[in-house]
Every structure is written in C-alpha cells, then in structure tokens.
Image (cartoon, rainbow over all chains, first blue to last red; front, top):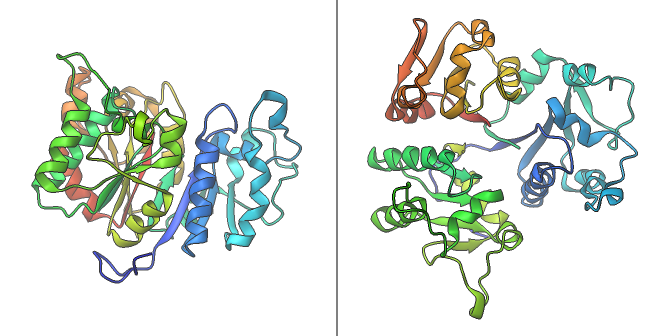
Length: 130
Length: 118
Length: 91
C-alpha cells in the first residue's frame, strides 16, 4: 500500500457513509457496508449514518434468505472489529416510520435529532451517500 | 480531486459527470483518479454500442484518459457482478480502465483534497 | 466546515431533496442539477434562503429560473467544489 504522504493533501480524512435506502431491493445498503469495511480495514476514521429509508437496514429480526437475498445485514455487528463505532440514526426518520421503540441489530447506535445529525455529518470531510 | 462514478454509460447523469470532469481538467484541477462503482462499472464495457446520434460516453472516457492520462479505476467485484471479465478469453474491459478494488478508492480518498460522488 | 450539496433528484419523485434540506447548516450551499432542477417548482424550495441551479440543466428541461434562484455554469460548479470543504451528492 502506498504511503499517504506524497499527495494533494495531508488532512486527516473523516469519512461519513450516509445510508438512505432500504435493504435488499437495491444493492445500495450492501455497497455502502462494503465500502465502510474497506475504509475500516485501512484504519480510516469512518462513521455510518442512516437517514430516510436507510434506517430500515438496522431493525432486528430481518431474514433476507426468505427472499433469495444474501443476508448482508448479519455483517453489521462486525463493524466494531473494524473500529467503526460511530453509527448514527436520524430520529426524525425513525419517528416517521414508527420505529422509535425498535430493537436494532447494533447495540451502540446513536439516535440524533435533525440538528445534531446534521452537526455530526458536518464533522466529516469525505461524504458518500448510498 | 477524486471522483466516484455510480451511474451507467447510457444515463444522462454520466454525461453530467463527464462534463464536470472535463471542465475540471481544463481548469487545471488535478484529478487523481476516477473510481467506478455500482452500475458505474458498466462504463468500462468494451462492447457498448450506443446509437451514433447519442452521447458517446465510453468514447469520452477514452478521450479524457488519453488527453490527460486520467486514471480510470474499476471496482472489480462490482464489475464481475455486472458481467465484466478480465479473463483472457472473455475480456470485455476496455483497455483504458485499470482493474482495481475498493482499496484503490480508499487510497484516492486519502490523497485527494476533494472527493465528489456522481 | 461547510458543505456543498448537489441535488440531482426531483422532490416530486423522491425524498432526497427533503433529506438534503434536513441536513443543511449555516454556510452550506445547494446546487440543483440534472432532475434536481425540477425542485425550482416544488414548495420545498421556499425553505432555502439561497439556491443555485446549473443553467443548462434547467434550460434543457424548459424550467424557468425564477428570481431568487441563481443560475450558474458547470465551471462555477467546479469553483464551488473548492470553495467548500466537502461535497455531498443527493441522488
């Protein structure tokens, strides 16, 4: 791996991956997670955000195998092994979907109101949205 | 700058992306590389034949690569899923694309002062 | 740090523009391009004090650029990319 010191820019990258889609019917959720794991494996500071239909990805008891889909959701708990500990959910999106009392597949998710969600997103300097 | 392309070659969204990239290059912006992900990998398919009166996306990528030595990186896992192959007898990946992995995107992101997703 | 928001979808079709608006902070700027141009005609636009639109994209769609909406070129878009710390794309 080429060292990151011969470049455009020396600034420490803080990567935010914003999930906006429900699981299964598109590959966006899995594609976003694959990207998060790669950034994690390269020890890049990476946070995950879930907004809109993206929040559906984290609710418990889903079973992708029932619909011939790979259950990539099972990989979410692995995020902590890649030091991806900052996982943020949009409160408003949860409310809209009646999910405020739900169980999530990850224990340490942080539910934020719109303002704090935006503030936290703004603390990152590379933003991907899927 | 690094750009990540997630839209297919026959989409007008890709024409927008090409326009943006070309103007940036003309302005002297240092684009370290373009990374193709999701259906964006289809831009690397050698056999795309768009009608002659349509915007020639794949030709445009080739021109930019030739004129500016713009690196075009393909996420190989996404490419395979979309029917692209670099096996000797079934190679359908256009030569000006570099077959890479997501690690390349990490490197580009690390090195670039701006990352734009289109 | 400020964000440049690129909105490429119509609010009449998806909630991307709404989510963008929910995420705006002081100093951020919004550019409508591709189908994002249709948002000029959506009531959500009233939530923004300032909004830019890529002129050729609006013209292509015969969407008139109203007073209060700033028409920009793709070259301007590149300058804006560097004016802000980062870019987020809503598509």
